[in-house]
Length: 287
Length: 309
Image (cartoon, rainbow over all chains, first blue to last red):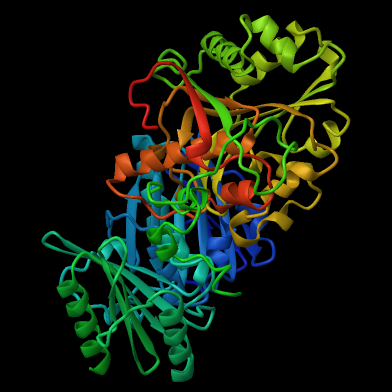
């Protein structure tokens, strides 16, 4: 399953994942440890739910120490699919690609990247120049030991209209809780999101005009239809034939269903942008 | 779930949802429902759910509380705390104020927080231990712990709840309310729906009705967290303050608003974060305290630069 370790490179295998024994002046404090969906809470204090909301399968982790420097943690998550590895990467992406894997970023002593079905985070609680170099070196070695990159974002992301899209603000997820994390819509799951749905949430900026667009793919047309009706009843009261309604704060929202997809403009600063995003999305779904 | 129980973003825009919940989901408070005729808040267990009360918290700051290198000045922090309890208890001297909070015969439990990246500062723990001793409590009758709270603090007669404010993936913010989760033998039971039911931990017999003071340390609060360990050193800043009150919900409501204001100041917009619904629920569902900022009286002491709130 996992790629080979370069000749002469000492390493520790945590049930398949290979993590190096050293990175610059840092050396591994002990062997790699693994956690599954049931035990992830034992390792992550406070954010396991974020990973469990995706298809997380297994975490392999190792801690590295160097005297007089902060410890570095290398965490390799098997997310079950490239789509979900991209999803967890997109969840808190802020920008700053550093050329690793299928997508990456570095900042503040934290390297994040996704590669195939793996999401990798190498981080230290404090950044120094030495930490930065060791973190990037660890990341490169982990990347080299994983299956080769070559994956792109899930198909639903490519269906988002491109004009005005803030690519660093695209979030891919499945569940209602994840939507509310990025954009609070309702205390209840009015879009009927679940493990079997895919959603892409995007931000748009064209000149001074701004909007948020949500694209959801359901497992069946019936599910999409039900979600459309639920959204109309709970959130889009007063929507006209074009599917748009002006909200109480003056912004525009609306939704349209096309097959198994639901296109939802959550808030657009003007009506023309809302209409344009809706029409462009439907056009891309037809294509 | 009926439409009546369901609250959507539009309910906030229409002004038909509560201000406390609006704050929890990071929406503006201005148009939301205000509280009715107020009466003064007294103690965390002294009122019923839905009762309209006001609460009081002290925000005290000192520019010298945290040094350039992050070192916390114990003497300054001690002075800040003394000023806060004087204001809170309306007593003229720290000795009178602490005597109001702690009796010589008390068995005192100081509930701290040991999260590795941002623990309760030991300097603050030492100040509290010293103040309890000064109030007449024997040193061997003062216990300080986090993870062992259920075992070591169970027979305490007076609790002081002290921890730093930080963003949190599950609950939106780790604060005073959440700090009592360690009194439970099953902390995970509070995790559902963004930890909405955390206030129930305050009903556990080992801690119910024992809390004399809540201190939400905002000396170096964390306003945003990333990665599996939810910590990014770029998102901690020297605010150099303490939020002190009898009401843990009011302390947290003010702390959450501070973190939100900082996120907007740094990022130019609100960054995604789990709504702090447990703070609103602690008020509206469980009656633990006041979460509506419109009903919290803030006593501001000391340094005011870049106060944000």
